[in-house]
Image (cartoon, rainbow, N blue to C red):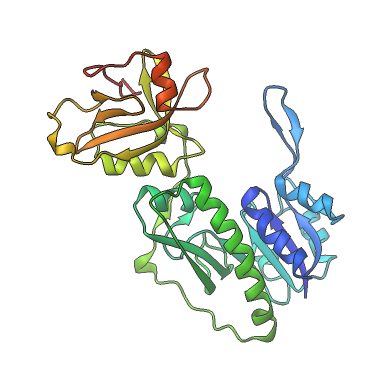
Length: 316
């Protein structure tokens, strides 16, 4: 089977590596153009481009893949299949119908739940117990194509957006290798998505990380895990941004005297306990603006927090 692969960020590297390790013939890789990054604004290649170049695979980087010259270049490869994972551009009907076996997409959720840009993080924020990877036959909609195969991945109480990302990246590569031979021999029966069960995982923004302590401790703890490592959850301490990297819901918090959300109710050698709208949240790892990420005990050695102090809603 001859494949053209389309992908851009880190998530898309795993499936490409899996195909190369599994002996799949990857004719070319299509990825987003190099973009300026960092303070220097130096043009940097996408993670998928880096991987492709390491394996001497031709790389195409069209600004708009729908343009006639890009379409013509794709046609020249005469691929059996286009495999897409977080490419970042919408494919035209002409491109979708170009390969003999069409185009398939690797999506990091159990469709039809969590269509869209950030399914990994939202599955944690929403308190899901499991998520997974779906390989679907692409159509012109947004993650609406028929389901070919799925792989379930449990979400643990310790999973962060970063750790779950890694798990799903690996699962996506495994599932792709299992799916390709079945697609080739016609043994897969596509299943239409149940629109009544669909949901959308909206794009992440830095503003989403603003911690509103009037929410419950359970909800805030999930937000902190889901947004770790980007964009991260944060509050304000003495006018500076304080990122919260790790927390847990405090046990027996009903014994604490109820105070205004955001108030520090207790400080120990290694933890900071904060009142929320429902329960108390124990802060375990933080990072003050301009400082390194550190565990709470190290932070407390440098800053004298005491009961009654308040973390401000960062929007105040």
